[in-house]
Image (cartoon, helix red, strand yellow):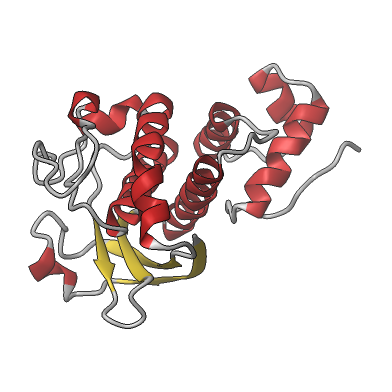
Length: 218
C-alpha cells in the first residue's frame, strides 16, 4: 500500500455520495495505491481488522451503513468481530478500513465528536483509491492518513516495529492540546525520558504531523 498524495479541498461532489458530510466542512483527499494482488488483501483482511479493533476499540462504534453482517463471497467468517464497516469482499475493504483508522486517529488527536469519510475506487488503474475525510484541521487529517497507512502496512506485512501506537497518539494529543513543542516540557508532561520523547517527535515529523520545528535537547 502506498500513499501517493494528499490534497485539501471541499470536493462538493461528495455531498451527493455521502449525506453525512457537512456541506461547509473542509476535507482532504488521500490517493492510495494497493501494491499486492487481490488474494493478498483478502487473505490478510481478517488479521488487519482484528488487530485494528484491538488497537482502536472505539472503531466498533463507527457507523458505516451500520456495518455488514453477511459476508457473501468470502471463505471465512469474521462476524464475531462485530465489524462496524461495510464489507464487500474485495480489495476496497482494506482501504476502507484505513479510512476508518484515519478517522479514529483524527477524532482522538483533534478531539472531534464526529467525522465522516468516503472511499472510492478508480476504474483505471483498478488498484488506486481516493479516501476523503472531513476535517477541522487539514494538517491533523493528513497526519492521521499517513499514520493509518503506515500502521496498516505494518500489520499486513506481519512485521514488528519499534514504535508504539499509544505513544504516538499520546504525544500528538498533548501537542495539539497545549501547543507545546519543547522537548524538555513534553518529556515532563508525559513523564518520559528525553530520548523517548525525541524518538516520538521524530516519528511525528515522518508522519507529517504539523511540527513547526524539531527541537533537540539544548
